[in-house]
Image 1: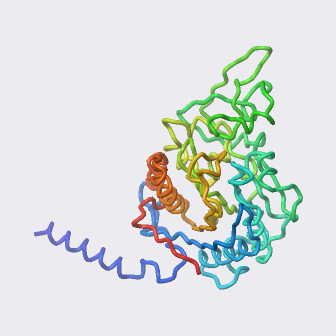
Image 2 (image 1 turned 30 degrees about the horizontal axis):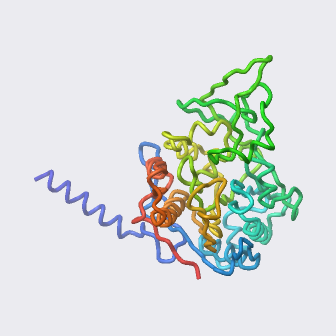
Image 3 (image 1 turned 90 degrees about the vertical axis):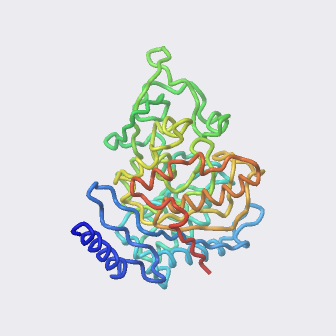
Length: 385
């Protein structure tokens, strides 16, 4: 009898909670996350929203229409924040005193990287919110790839930076998975044994990194093994807020070059050990993103899908590319990546390829870390008109 009464009381309390204003109001830009559980792991919100805007005029023959790109970015950020002007939308995310980092993905440059026109639209929006261009940093791992993608130092007043050789010795992410250090990793000892300029773009596995012997030390080849990665100093010491701008793309190593990938793998040295088979980024990618030095700074994810690459990334191949003319935005990186993976799966299944979602299993793991929703049934894709 007492047991039945207790169950009835729990049911009444649950019903009251569901009707007491806890559910998102219609038109609310993002669902608020539930309070943290006793385990200390944030609980995933009951639903997540991914905003999508499409304009076929935005890209033609791999050339971007800057005006169309700006309209798309402006509409997205207003929708994602629930604000009615571009200035107020960006002002709800950052302050004029912030140093705002725009984390691009230059892998696959020049055709399959974050487009400068999208970044320019974000910069203009930040300017309208009072953030001066000198307080805006555009960055990725490699200087050469940034240049190939169309980014130039001192261009339009923003600061251009790169992480290669610039990692924070105090920002260490450890893992039981050890890997071979190479030139550019913080703990590497010795000199490069190859020509970096030549080898950077000739990786047969398409990893867009240097493949070499670990290096020479006192005239001998030595293997240098480490289970640690260091985070980019740009992220830990320079920027105070981040707009993450990944691409809509697969990845030969971990399945997806999405929002989580762009903020973790692309910001770490000695990252190769974490994404290759059989690890494929699981659980390394969500584990890394959950570090507050990374996740706490990101205020919005804007995915560049003007060109979608469903196979062969990061180097890319036009045979597997679609000029999709689409941008996405969300405050939930897991939901955004899940929507991206689902879209790429449709193209890959048609081409008789393994679905991205079967490789990028780290998306489901990310939900167990409380980083967001990986269940499509709990994700609303909201079209922005």
